Length: 107
Image (tube, rainbow, N blue to C red):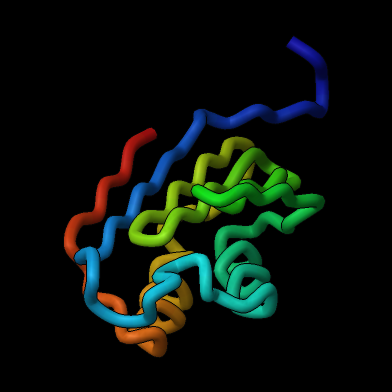
């Protein structure tokens, strides 16, 4: 234990969208502004990112974000408020015409 240091439990949210509905690039079409708003609602920030043909991966101040065409996975720890990112996430994906298929949360 380190005094003054808090490492809260890991929290995970996985959001899956119906394939072939909405924008052809799916979640990967989300703008950086949209991703920043999603992360801000969860009380974390994007530090850096890397992409390949299959996904966009982001290192966050409180862990990681993985964006695929039809799925987003946000893993956080510490003092994040992960469930608060759902409203901006669903708003942004709805604007792309994506249809929610499944949502999972764990901690």
